Length: 136
Image (cartoon, rainbow, N blue to C red):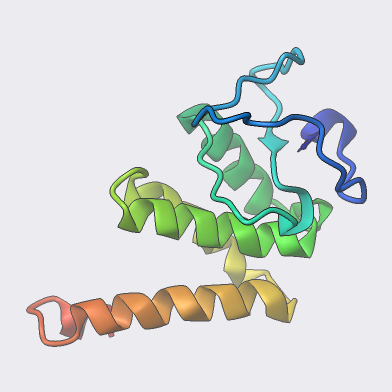
């Protein structure tokens, strides 16, 4: 993992293991004003759900001019995790949609490919419903 005050998206070696538990509590002291991002460069095959404050801090950073501080693979993974968790009813769709607003500035292909898959899924789910016209 990495955090905003000392971010390093190059070290992808595991720093902690879940060991059969569904949750991980970091032993490191993390301030309420800093984000932490797990699954650096999306090297693990798992979803990450953050607490509401961390989602908010990540979204704030992603919608700032400094969004490129977060590795491009993590930007794509954050989108994918947020929408997948929303689809599963674990995360509010508002959180995922707010995160996706950063795409107005995104120039790299990888996050857009991730978002394209997300929108394609939503499009298939809404086709034939009353709100499909508004979605289009």
